[in-house]
Image (tube, rainbow, N blue to C red; front, side):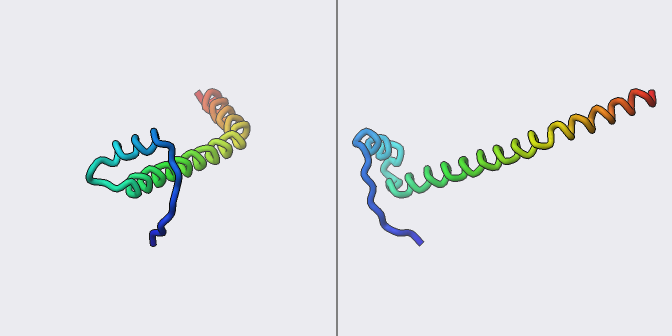
Length: 77
């Protein structure tokens, strides 16, 4: 469900908005599309940050396990 709202924009932003929307798209449609894209990108970055935190938290353990495997493989050769 859509709700009507009002925002105040500077004239230069409004001019760019009108230019990007063109004659066949409403300002509202363009703003909604841009905001959806922005929210998706923020969510993607947040997931990436969480993944990186998990990897970093486990890095010492994973590196230690990798070293053990390499040492085992070297001793078998």
